[in-house]
Length: 163
Image (tube, rainbow, N blue to C red):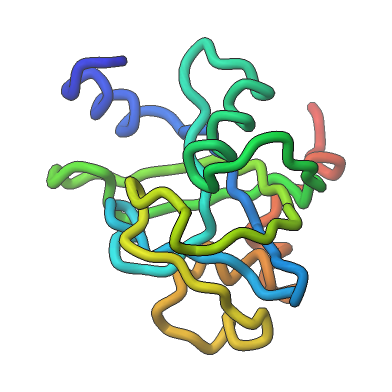
């Protein structure tokens, strides 16, 4: 683990790579957690987290599913690569945060009372059609459900011109 000042320098200087989990139950509702930490503090957001230095993708995915959902051996479908830009960061210092996000969809049914509360104060299942109009749900979470804005957030890696 990096010392605090070094970690701040990393976030000021480079994008972070993370995994977001778009979790649906058997009723098609979407699981969101109320964020405790910056960025996006106080908003409803999909579970997920960053990939750590020297951590393989597979290990990171399993860790995040375990830490964020308290589950093991979950099948997931890749949704896409997204970019999230925030005006703030985890600290009180004034600098932005940039994430490159690998989004995955998961089918999951578990009692909310058993979910970990380290990153979120509470969890709730939301009806997908109600997500877009809810001001308490963060814009970056809404992107996963808005066809017309996905193009702005989604990184279409097949269409990037190479010079």
